[in-house]
Image 1 (tube, rainbow, N blue to C red):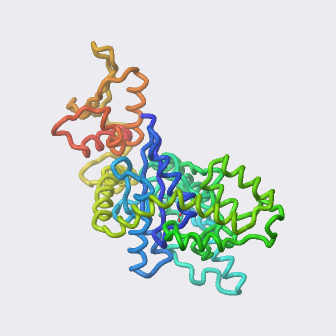
Image 2: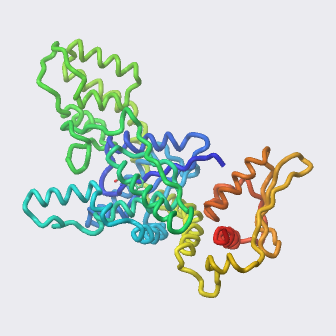
Amino acid sequence: MSSKRFLTGITTSGTPHLGNYVGSIRPSVRASLKADVESFYFLADYHALIKIDEPSRIQRSTLEIAASWLAAGLDPERVIFYRQSDVPEIPELTWFLTCVTGKGILNRAHAYKASVDKNTSAGDDPDSDVSAGLFMYPVLMGADILMFNAHKVPVGRDQIQHIEMARDMAHSFNHRYGEHFVPPEAEIEDDVATLPGLDGRKMSKSYDNTIPLFAPREQLKKLIASIVTDSSAPGEPKTVEGSALFQIYQAFATPEETTSLRAAYANGIAWGDAKQLVFERIDREIAPMREAYLALLNDPAKIEAILIAGAAKARQIATPFMARLRHAVGLRDLRVQTSNKAAKTAKVAKPVFKQYRELDGKFYFKLLDANSRLLLQSTGFDSPKEAGQTIGLLQTQGASALPGLADKLQNIPAVETTEVGAALQLMTDAE
Ligand code: TRP
């Protein structure tokens, strides 16, 4: 299976703005439409608890962000779209990762360090008003990513450090307990990774300089008119460097449109005219989605149902994977003795993969348990390599690979996913 797994989350702590759209929602919706990707999108509501203690705001934001994603074209049939707090395996995995993460690493996390620096320069206690939740933020984020063994995480530059930390967590866990996690990579959309806000600094809730993604047309126009510019008069040439207006335009325009605005700047376009142009260009992209968004906001039951269905899909992966991780760290059924030593010394029969070729010329494999009972039966592959890769995936990811392999395996009634998971686990333990 060559398919790549993409995963991204948005913290449900506010109303989505253009920066979220350009930096996260739009690229991830685009990625979800590509063939050969499996995408995970979630509402990071556990993360929201770190900064927000207003319950109604969390609920409202969850609704708004879910509606924004759906309005932007996310197809919940095609992707796994869920709410973080509907997957209890995530906080459980957070604890496992907490135990393999150095405290010193977390001391260096940007968000935590920024708070400490601010306190220190104000002469306060370094940890004044810093919750342990803020400190642990990167571990929860690591669990989000590693839970689904995502390969690529599309994020803004400010989040790269978190992805690196997740890689470290994957390595430390794998080092102690065997290969369970794929180290993830950040994926940055280069031209438009961060959008400037109204005041020219990064568009961010914390700077109060955002343009809400689905602001009504009139409000959008007003907000764009309020983007800072220099004081050059109409007719005076303007530079695109450092122009927030230009950068925002660039995030929506084609390269040709961008080139022509660049020329207009050089020719001294009046700021008012430039702003009008930028407004119309953005509104052209946003207007159809805005309608879909408003319809969804009026139908919360529909969104709730979509999220519940998404969580069920997510847990088809998370539940067996977590069972495997619990086993790996030693949280085990006391009746089953599977210590490494016992498995190595005892010459008991083990589950095996068998590869073979059929008369149809295709390559197959099956998984038999220790009593030669058939647990898995593949469909035909064109090459032995493909069959081998699929086996490799089962060996490294265990039962969590099963949902992704649905079309490569034949249905065997009376075999439970947990039995397959246990057999795969036994094979890894025995190595
Ligand atoms: N920290 C991200 C943000 O605030 C949200 C987030 C939480 C996330 N978990 C994630 C993003 C996992 C990507 C992957 O923007």
